[in-house]
Picture 1: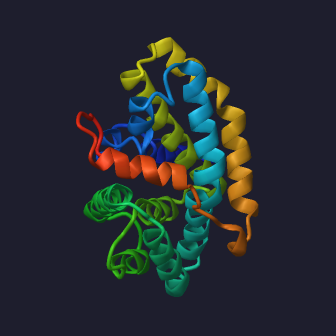
Picture 2 (picture 1 turned 60 degrees about the horizontal axis):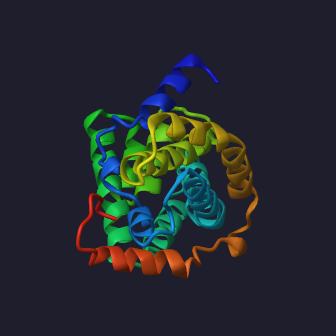
Length: 226
């Protein structure tokens, strides 16, 4: 990867990107509350299972398709996968999370004048913009290679999950970094899955996670918005 593309990828996946990712746990806080995640080992099990059974089988493959659609300036494909992803958010928190972060990133990209007029038009033509759509737009506009963008998206998700565990289980900082290092092979495997799945193989079927998200909506004490 060229240095410029690498720097763009680092900026897109940085925790300092002002889209509010730090305020969401994607159901993990509810799992911590009910005792399913309580130490480093159970945290790793949760993250690995969620990565392979949920993210790698739906969010990441849709992100991969959106990268290709934006690169081809294919308005029909962009709208198709944008709408399917939004429709698959099965709780109020999950839907609000992706729409809020997608809106924040798309507004940031427009304010920074990233991409050409056609790319901006493709994104702005969507009624609602979830995070995968905004991130795919930004990656294509900044000429980040697709495979690198996919790994960056997966790493950002994993890093946020680890940070939730560090703050809320709680785990120590060293344990958090050890956990991140141990997950590198899992990230590579998840990226391969996301690229290889056919359209008919995509699935967001995760009833346990959906129930945790619904429970989190009425959880008495919480730090995160999902």
